Amino acid sequence: MDGVRRALDSLSATPTVGEDTAEAPLAAAARVFLDEVGGTSGPLFGLLFQELADAVAAAAPTPPGTGELAAGIAAGTAAIQRVGEAEVGDKTMVDALLPAAKALADCPPTADPSRSLRLAAVAAHRGARATAYLRARRGRASYTGDHAVGVPDPGALAVALLFASADGELTTVSRLPEHRGAE
Image (cartoon, rainbow, N blue to C red):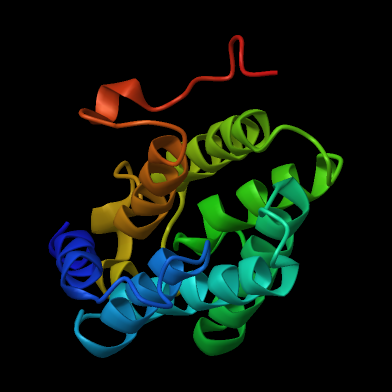
């Protein structure tokens, strides 16, 4: 959560002249996560936000929609996979990110972004929950061997929380979206 706070602080400290574009908050988040947030997942989230910012900027001056979200998440997922060499089943953030990217890609580009993000959140949550039954092959959890079996991957949970919070304020993990009623 420290990275999110830093990104929000960066946004409030940024002059608004020329920064009132749709991609500005995503670009600010990318800068913070890439430059200031340590660990493994900080820069990976920075890549995701940067690709999202680029996709949203490409749509300007048209407001971004599901098509831009899908393109940005797909590009961000590809960048993360390229850097981390992770695939679904490795018990990493990719286990939640790839299903969310697929859910967005399966939506028509003109679909309501809120509904599309809800479907992506459900897919990310399913992917994150499934990591509990995996033995980690990549990422930090790979160093723990079987000790992490039974526990969902923290990066995958962070991705699920990101998508769950995209359409509203998320105040508790228990509010992660379930499949029922999402489609």
